[in-house]
Image 1: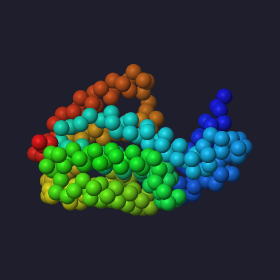
Image 2 (image 1 turned 180 degrees about the vertical axis):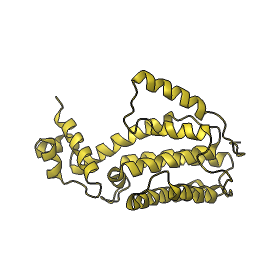
Image 3 (image 1 turned 60 degrees about the horizontal axis):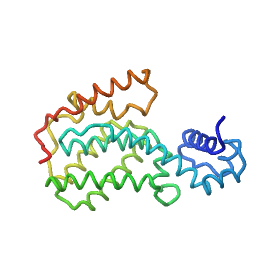
Length: 236
């Protein structure tokens, strides 16, 4: 039997998923969980604490998947893959993403602060390699603004995270940050890029595999994803 805390988390997940454009009220949350208001206050302090706990939970699972994707040795390609994963998370979790970046409450969640630190570290690696033509903080703010805007527009239009709009915005962003002209090859082509994309998706949906099969699939995809990128950019 689930505890009151678990019931509240499950209720919040369900309500946020069912109505992405509506943040549930305190009453809606504790009634859906089958508990009393004091139970919610005891475990989470208030409604915002409960919703933020759901956001943190979902983002932690996303980060685990993201960190499991091996580096290609191409820092720009890795940054692009990070963009793709971030946008996919936002499009698949529009209500949580809106809460995460304060579009409903006016304040950013802990998950947003973690995302910012992850992004800053990625940009610092690009800067250390001499690949940035703007400062790290400027790159951080620009990248965040474009990612949040991209997710919002994709959600509004009902377009996929891997569609032309996201790819175009990523190309513009990378070009501004690095001063590089768009590559001649189409983003996402090649076995390494395909393997990284599949690794990024594993765990976000229910796969028809046993744990052993999923572990083996991850091993195979990881080997493919670790192959050097075909483009001429290097991390040195």
